Image (cartoon, rainbow, N blue to C red; front, top):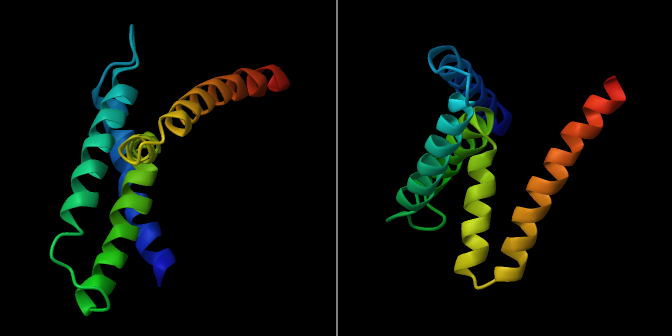
Length: 125
């Protein structure tokens, strides 16, 4: 059943991302990408705190919360922007006092990600 929640959320997230791309101009700056990244980070920050308030472990409410998390965080936000997951994980590392790991994550995600784009473009052509 988990894959259905992810698929439903993913479909909506992908449609939302596509819609933002249609509405916001691309030139001279990729505003749509910035918008979905910021909105996605805001949404994941809000949802992951809001959704855990007042839910007792082992209850039906906890099971439903897990389904909704799959729908909203993994599916919807995952398809809308993966940057939200990166932002949440980095903030979690910082809150845990793991400054080195947070900095490494930032550097590796940006450096390797951008490098992979360049490498992929070079391989293609």
